[in-house]
Length: 151
View 1 (spheres, rainbow, N blue to C red):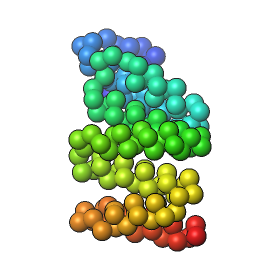
View 2: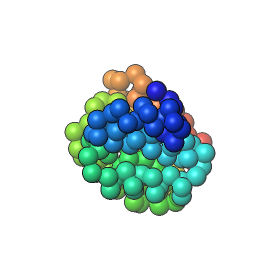
View 3: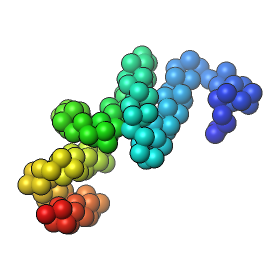
């Protein structure tokens, strides 16, 4: 189901969905667009999409959390590291899956490094490197190498 929602085929597919499902499908499409913009270095264009999602009633918690994390990424890309770190730390304080926690810890560690806080970044990456989770451990080691390179 990858039809353009503005095309006749897309409109037909969307009209068959229940209202709640339509909200979720459109929210996922917006998340995808915002991610594409972030990956292209257009944080200033991605941030309003994330903010719009956060203001939308009825979106699933998973989408809301992704929009919050994405807002942090957009802010970090725009140089607003303190606000980005606040968002990510707030998300870390909530219950998370192991995968989500690792991603958030990586965002925090990378944000610290980007903000010139090498010692704090090294501590965060060391924590990941010491993880029993193989992926987290590898990401932590890669982060420690980045800290060393930045030094």
